[in-house]
Image 1 (spheres, rainbow, N blue to C red):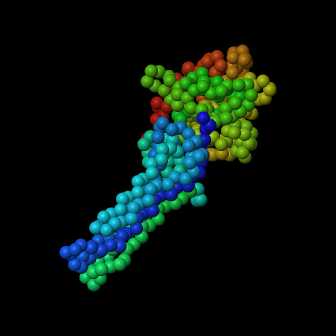
Image 2: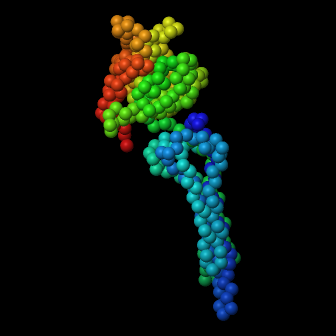
Image 3: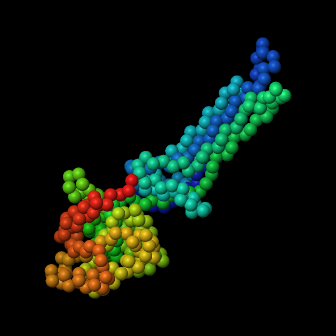
Length: 339
């Protein structure tokens, strides 16, 4: 299934039903008076977070969401039937924006969260409401009001505890494949990962966390180059970022420069994201000797003035991955997500 994380939709709530103009017409009831009923209210449109859905692809072919109109009032003081509300399921983590102003209308971060995005029109009044001592036979009613109509932008931010960052071919897909139940494509060419992948990392029987892998970033990503910048929103909710770096790149590039390149792109995208807790993970240590790994680790830390934790692993050989995941689990236990 193609991953879709941003769509625009047209929302139309139902119109309210008009009031009824009616008078009692009974054989033995002279001067029966008005008996026009009120109209029914229009249906509203609600978005509901559904954990069974993980993409917005349905809205690629469903661009108009319309609730039911209210029924007009009837004689004998009968009220028209209200329009049914339209309940639309969206993935957990969906953020709703007004398309024209960019205003954030809501953030559905928990399963079952609901948001009314278009209010149904108010019902009209029948002529019985306008009866007075002066006007015993009013011929006045009010129409139902139109329902709200608006354009929305729906944006999906995946809910993960840990996010993976790095250049293409840093080994992020291999890492998430080795430590979780995710099965992303792994190949020896850039941009193998074309959309975010989620995986559940099970550390113990009843202890696990969710990890997100996004397409690799490249220089100039914040100006629209490459794929990764489109998906950085998916790691903005995470509690911890793992910055994977190829410690032994085949093209001979400096791993320290690869670290700084990602940091620059993060800062240009979002200072808030750049300030998140981030651990440096040096991958592919199986390609070097233990002495060479230690030398490069010291050089990278010194060049980048790295102050956070540093881990050396081999995702392919699963070397050091268990220890890293245990430390991540311990960190998440000590820093629970705010409710």
